[in-house]
Length: 315
Image (cartoon, rainbow, N blue to C red):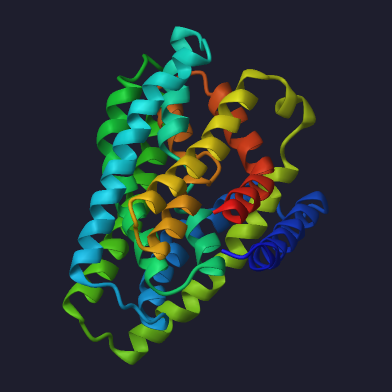
């Protein structure tokens, strides 16, 4: 992808995020508002965007290419799981913290940030491959992710009920995204017609996604304290490897085996995303200390503007 195109698209993203930063500092966006808007993005706009991409873009991917994308996505997650076991040991992370670094290695924010960002930068078949990657994210997280994080710790009944309700809401949100993703793939696979009214509803709803997601991203950056950013120096080495080296290596490997350029761009972009909030929510449910995950999300989100531009510029 040309560097000028990347800089142009990232400038648009950065300006929208800056709007969110300013709105948060002025008190227009605050914690409760952000939670409600986040639910709107995850529960409605993201699923609608998956369908809208299939309707608006010209999808030319063959059945063989769709299956190849599924296979590559599974392979990528398999390699990430392996790296999740290796990187903490290389960085000499304390044993009790290894699983948090493992989760941050495997699960990046491919949905809430990745999908709208991809929509702003990619088109056509590339968006279909992004959707496939998101579907595989859900399948791996609710199997492998739950296994890695282990059992819940003992907590009070009130804490347990609150955590269960929160987790149930998030399971519902994730399932909506997975359902819409699978539906998008089925629409392409079987060349299913979509009624115009339903199609337009998905398009108009999906159009709001990028703006809402980016202003919320800016608001989350505004809420981060400098103390939080610089309190864990080990994270910087980890994030340098995960957000720069891993996506670059993946891009070069995919190119070396002659994978379609749309797949290279889609998977490289998804691998460049900042850390996801899902592991944090799972850790909260289990009564774990979430400081490392919180710091990882905050730092990776702040630096992602630069790292994504750098990675795609090289690819």
